[in-house]
Image (cartoon, rainbow, N blue to C red):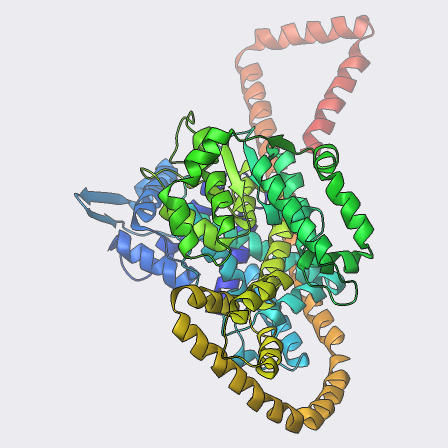
Length: 629
């Protein structure tokens, strides 16, 4: 299933490589191929039959309404000759949809499918080799398609207007996938290009699965308000991996005609976070994510104080961000809504709930004059956040089926891709993969700020001794972000359960320390073996990369052969036309002698005026033109 999905995504991207019309370039051909596969077994079927074929062949679930639309498009796309040949009929009776044909065949894209299958299989093989050399068992970790699917499923949910239905992966790690991506980006261009193509294909698959309206065009001039964390990432004051995708996304927004904005309440929240980092600044033992970023950048406390003092000017001058002041009356009105109270119930830091609700309600107010409030493409304002739980909460608060006001970076990237798929595929895939890396690191490794939040929750427990407290913090720093969030939430909703969970973690950590001491010597020996086997990794990946390069070269040569074939066909066509014209001229001249006499007199006249050679040159030029075709 994993390799099948990688093939599907790579295939989708290959089909749209030279086109901006995803529906015509991708949707219709894959439906034709599904119908052709079905025709090998039966000549009568339903929309559900084709839905099942697409599911089994491509590994994706397409809504029945889209299947029906595609089948109709296939019929409309047939030539008169093919309509007569296949006798393709569609029967609609209420909710029932069926079709019949004498026969149906479509093989124009089979070579492309086979080529992409070889490339995706090579990529999966390379990942498994890399994982083994990293000491991982490929059978015990998620497949590479699982990694790509994390993003695809999130985008599908967003485009469908649903709360994210991504499976909880807190018990598994995607760090081998992150390390593999980082490795091939630096060391193997062919494998990285293949991965970028697969990523674009996964975005296209999310459009298809979510029944997203590709005909509606994105509005230019859309305004995007940035949340606190997005701005801190832009300033490179969060994790190192967060800065690049955020900066690239801001560039993409500007290139596609968007405006970057910031609410004054968000600016105040950013300054509060920086001031907190200044108060608790520790160069040797950073206590906040901002503090940690300063140490990484080689910046001191004085630099951070100066940055905070001129922050507004930096954002306006260096990043072209417009700052909007929200009227006090609006803030007061939004602060007293039920949304604020409900968001506080699931937040440990309750004061942040007011900012977030005010932000999305302000965006809702700004959208009141939008022509179509239910289409994502027609939204004139958005609030960009990296907070998944806030995004999901906002979806549950949608009004009258209108589009939610909050969007995440990866979702916005997939939306902007539709501005020009052919032109933007390279940028979107780079941003998307970097964002996927950043999100995975964020999910797997808790930030300093999250540890501080957990620390606040634990410090209220009287049953935890000083020694246990140290053991607990040592243990929790190794847990995933998702698991820590769950613990913090239980501290709010189920205090007694929180106490039991904390003591269970402490006891488990004590037992683990005993096991670690026993396994230490074995680990040293294992590391030596890994170091030896790691030397062969580059050679094996290089061999696979060569396979992909050969496939790409075969595709290039096939295109050249096709062009040469078309050129020869054009020559033969012109030669046949010339012969027909010549024969026609001979027949006419033989049948009408008077015309022959007139031509003879004309030629004598041209020759007498010195134009005969010019006439010959004209003939030679025409012949050269014919040969060029």
